[in-house]
Amino acid sequence: MPELPEVETVRRSLSATILGKRIAAVTPHHPKVLRPSVRDAETALRGATFTEIDRVGKLLIIATDKPDLSILIHLKMTGQLIYSHDREIIAGGHSLTHDVVHDHPSKHTRLTIEFEDGGRLFFNDMRLFGYVEAATERRVDAARKKFGPELIDSRLTKDAWYQLLHRRKTSIKAVLLNQTIVAGIGNIYADEMCFAAGVLPHRPAHALSRAECDRLFTHGKRILALAIEERGTTFNHYVDGQGNKGNFLRFLRVYGRGGKPCITCSSILAKKKVAGRGTVYCATCQK
DNA sequence: CCTTGTGTTCTCCG
DNA sequence: CCGGAGAACACAAG
Image (tube, rainbow, N blue to C red; front, side, top):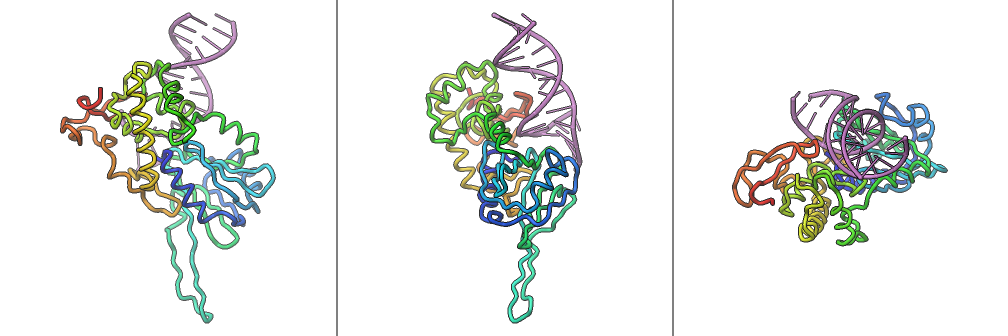
């Protein structure tokens, strides 16, 4: 599942490949992926050049050189954005190589954006929850406003973090997953943060002590930073902008490990639904 | 039946 | 009766 570290990795990898390239053609392979409508988005995108890629939480915001046009992209659960360029090296009139980096479009490719230099950007999404949206500045501003601060934002202080959490009556897991309270955390990192902080995910947020909130703050920042460094977690579908898997899977201590022994105390990790999501935790290590 | 991110809708409470 | 919080539902495919 693409969460903040995965989307940030996609942002960085695509920033190195698609910026400054003019869009020659937009080919939708499924009607519900392009917003606000297939026709409007196609018209807006054709001839545009991507100038900068920003990210808020799990949402990518790509600026263009067209007036009042940005592109919002959300990968949701199974979305992938993969850039591919069929490289042809011509020497002495002969084509020496023709490397097709990826087998695309695949059956889950919902959109292909072709650039004038021959490079192509594929939007794949098995589940069809993700979208590519042509947006005005007004729309982008409205989208940005819905997000709370990010845990990796250096402007977010420990005190402000405590203020965000300690009044909430719902579970700490539901708070961590709520994008309007804190942006970018999904099911994988929520469970990892609770484990690292020694906090049971179903505890009401307002029942957490200052020390427990501080531990969530410190470990949360550490986990997200390390996950970005390791280019994200590939559990099922996630790949970066070049089709490469992330390396953070080997750092996971609880997610996906329900029924297996705790890394710390060897007791069997519990698994149950919290905040409507599958949740793994250690009933011994987490209080 | 399970998996999950988020927008929408419903319910509850003061 | 309004507003807000929180929970439940809808979506989608394998």
